[in-house]
Length: 125
Image (cartoon, rainbow, N blue to C red; front, side, top):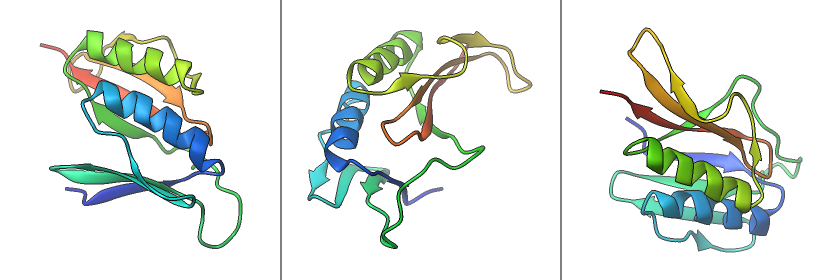
């Protein structure tokens, strides 16, 4: 459905460190790019960070969440731990199973160094 997702970042080096860590847990190679943009390429799409081209500071979208598919609770927990160790911060409830109208979901939430909200999601059973 999506060709790419790009998020704003104020500190490219700190954000690259964070995304290399959490995306590495998912099997994605380290990002490539320069001082203003970094790209993580996969067979199904691209994830990127950038300094905003309008010169204004990057900020998180209110009500926005970027979700990453994970293979199970163990990978979600590893993703969460890697993000915390690489400069992210916990948000929402701790990682765990949450009932939903779509069936039980295992969710883990983080904020990246720029404050963007992220989620690792595994659909249970």
